[in-house]
Image 1 (cartoon, rainbow, N blue to C red):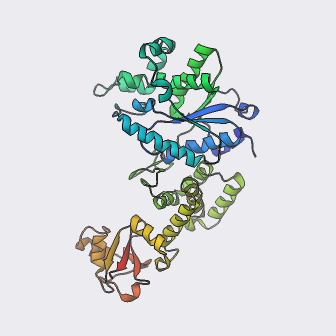
Image 2 (image 1 turned 90 degrees about the vertical axis):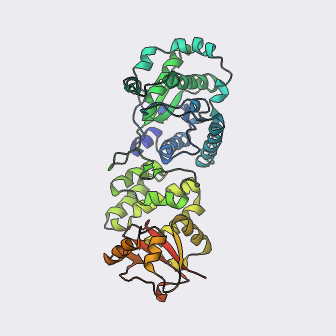
Image 3 (image 1 turned 180 degrees about the horizontal axis):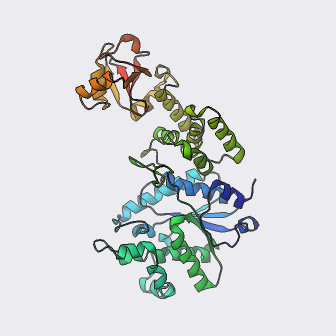
Length: 418
């Protein structure tokens, strides 16, 4: 196994750190924490990037505390937000905490870690005592100097509330508490948490005289769009299968741009350097159109998050949609997944293709459907057609796939009625 400092470097998991020499990670075992606020009932693949970094820390012998922010979640981190967050109910926060804890258990299955909730040490902390013990030791200049604070203060319409302004002090105390109670001496996070994390280092130094450190990784950004990774045109890509199905999750990775796939293999999989190099050699050796790197990426990440069975089903369904396998060969489980993933319409053996396009929302009107057919944009079982009606030979095992254009996501399952 390579040294942790080397592993984090070649995978791209280094942005800023308070360590004088990153090789300190190889010379001593740190006790570290990583936290997620329960702003939703699932993590996204943006969180997954940081979770993969945490995996490497654990695999190299460092002790992990995984925090669910029951207390900080009541306020919400204002960093990066242009206006005040909406307050969530305590019931919703409790539900979200439980869901995130279960995702911790799934992602880090088989690893040693402890889950902690900062509400446990804040719920009985008297406000005046907190101001006296902690507030007195957090310089206002440190808080006012934050870029997002200055930005919000200049905004006359939104500004920033005292609660959100105080968020950094609350998170700094998390670090102090975990340091005192569990000997935590390192916080790992995304680069957007650098200011909050360093505030914790300063608080620990002021109140205990001890040394603590921060390690941050760059936020993952789509190299073509510049959009923070984990966001698509439809919104976040969730780890919860009820919000982003395993098949949609798998297909998200299959659609990775060529320019980004090698970087994502390093970040989101546990493949080693040689395995990634071999995959990229296959990709770049005249086989780019078959997207072997993207399919490897999709398989590895989906297995990690949803398990091997779900990954295999997602792969098979995607092969049907991409024309790499015949939908006539789909078993009942695969058909069930297809019906959930794409529109499903019924017809007869000589039924109207125009009706099928409209009913499946592949066309918004009969006129639009005719125009699509006339322009050669409609495919039946991966073959371009220019007719208005199905033929009996189109159906095999009483089913077929119809597609608009070349993007296999714009497909519908058509089945014979009865």
